[in-house]
Length: 148
Ligand code: RB5
Image 1 (tube, rainbow, N blue to C red):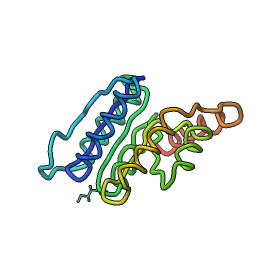
Image 2: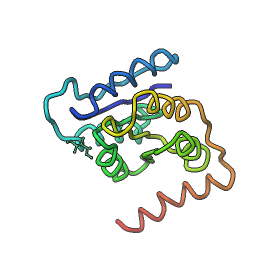
Image 3: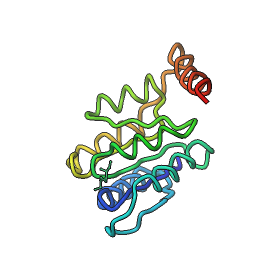
Image 4: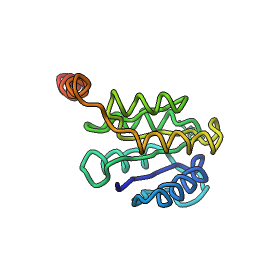
């Protein structure tokens, strides 16, 4: 798979670890920045990754900021992006199986790197179950469209 990754300054180090994991697992990385620890604004990178995933330029995305919260809030404003902040690997598994989550948000300041990479492994390796969950995922986009 091609995985789009992005972070702000507070998530930069974990983003680099995510990239190493993704490449080691045999996937391709599309790095949307940032490229260092100079202070910057998380919405820029969340938008870039969410657009890449929604447009099919990447199959999945990973976003890292200090908490993961701002990234998740921003990414979910883009139709077709289904971003999750997973407190545990079980959340990451269910997010894939039931919700077809396509973006994983991580908080470098709150989640130890080993835990974050364990969640990433689950996020990348777990398939969507489809079936009744397919209809529900489609309803997300349909109902969100009614609010436009
Ligand atoms: C940056 O200080 C921090 O606010 C940001 O990385 C993120 O946690 C926001 O949700």
